[in-house]
Amino acid sequence: MNRVQELEQLILKHKSLYYRGRPEISDQEYDSLEEELKKLDPQNHVLRIVGTTLESGKKVKHETKMLSLGKTYDIDELMRWKGEEDIISTFKIDGVSCSLIYESGHLKTAKTRGDGSHGEDITNKVIWMESIPKSIQKKEKVEIRGELYCDEKDFFHLSEEMQRRELEKPTNQRNIVAGLISRKDHTDLCYAISFQGFDLIKSKDPEFEIQKHDELKKLGFETPEATIHKNKESLLDLIQEAQEFMSEGEYLIDGLVFTYNRTALHQELGSTAHHPRYKMAFKFAGESKTTTIKEIVWSVSRNGILTPVAIVEPVQLSGAKVSRVTLHNYGVVKQHSLKKSDKIEIIRSGEVIPKFLSVVESGNEEFKIPKKGCDFCEKDIIVDDIRLRCINKFCPDRDQQVILNFIQKIGIDDLSSKRIEEMVKKGLITGIASLYDLSVDDLLKLDKFKEKLANKVINNIQASKNVDLVTFLSALGISGGAYNKCEKVVRAGHNDLDKIRALSVEKLSEIEGFAEKSAEDFYNSIQEKMPLINELESKGFEFQEVEIEETEVLGKKFCITGSLTEKRNVIEQRIRDYGGIVVGSVSKNIDYLVTNETESKSSKFKKANELNIPIVSEKKLKEMMGIL
Image (cartoon, rainbow, N blue to C red; front, side, top):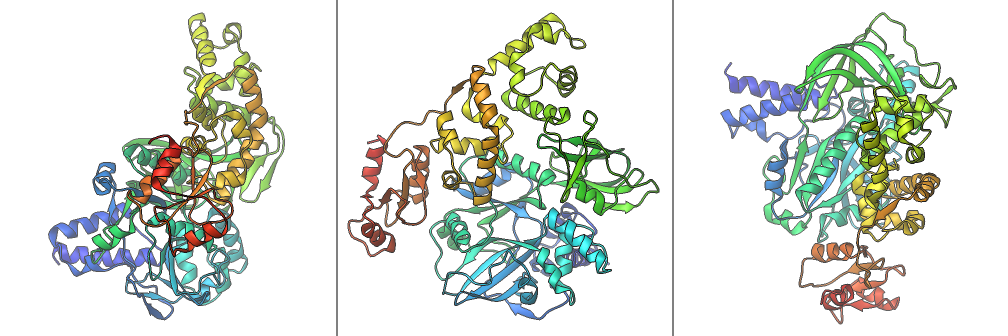
């Protein structure tokens, strides 16, 4: 057998195992097999095979092929592909692709990707999935494509239910999806599978890809968060966010998907036999190895959740020496009965903290969980679904994590985790605000603190009071309040503390990048932080507000329709830059309709007239912004 034939067999074998939920090699190892075959035999028929077909169920033809994605692991290659175009990003959910066909507003067929031309009919499985609407407010025939997946909470409860039914215990979140949709019995277990839609196929595409996501939300589908990117800095922020989600998120992702925002470009570029040219997957190179757990330690996060970390026999992984591995949460530890002496498989993708994948061999030590909150706190812990939670709101370890997060984000140098721990134990600080009551004499009570260093630290603390509002908000530990999210809030016109205090879920939902749930989480979290915000303001914080020119556009809602002299996405971004809000449809809640047409048969134009909504031209819009 020559190398080409060997590669053909390996690729087909591992492709089949992957889609049956039993992968034996990593994505990166599989990709290297395909790359080697491309170099040896670029026209090989195996390279044109997309997906595979699950063994059960009848086959259904796809009207439009469900192709794979081109992929890269390199940011510069991604930027070359982007060129001058705006691109849309979403997390690449690690699950099973699914197509939903609706006719006359009712779900008719659900199918897997299969070989790209024909998929398996899984309609009888999808009817159990609560996240998939069985009817929608759209009479024309449409197809919604997305990803089936199982989040960590549902996986935990599903695992218990399957064991109760004396079925085989599932191994991980991704494999269970492939396993459930290929079962011929116990189909009701598919209730634990979730769905997020990322593509809408109908007779006529909207002008921009981002509009598909807006329409999917209106039809009642969960969608991955979509963000428009114009430059490399924006992409780097997202990549960092994705890496953090890979370690801490509630469901599995294995990278990011990027799509050109202009749908006209989709038609122009078309597809290869394998992938569309207008989409690109960005993946994180990952390496997995086996090691042994030496100890499991639990720390209390700033929201009171106990997070398990395995101290393992050191191994080299993706160029780094690894001795600590995240075990995610109590549910994962309980599900796998993780304990000292277990031999486990771990993975490190990109630059993120290594994480647990599976148990290779169970050890002989006793499985146990902590009996108290943390090393500092003797309070009881409670089981909160798949997590353990310390009930003591004043737990010193919890305070320590909150303070440490703040000083790292606000930019106070020379205060390490160990120094914060010592300060908490000695009662010098009890929370973020107490940092600003510290004196040089206080710091001299600490181990190895000399007067020069103490003066430097105090100066650094006091200097942090003069900070921009975005950095300040991102340092507070707001749920879903990463720097880029806080920046979007401030640039949407909420650029001082009074406006932050006046935020509502509705206002947040209007900001690009905020879905309803993320808006609710952000709002509830910032309300909890208000006493702290007020206290810090009383300590003398002076915020360098992001300057947003006060124009007629600030805080107003705009809808755009009709022919324009500039690209619509350029006009939309300009509105956002001046603190305005762009919406996709006309309602009584918008302030202006933007169009150059004085008469139009468009539904938006007619509705604006019916509601007496002012109609402005591009020229008038620029005058409102003060740029004409």
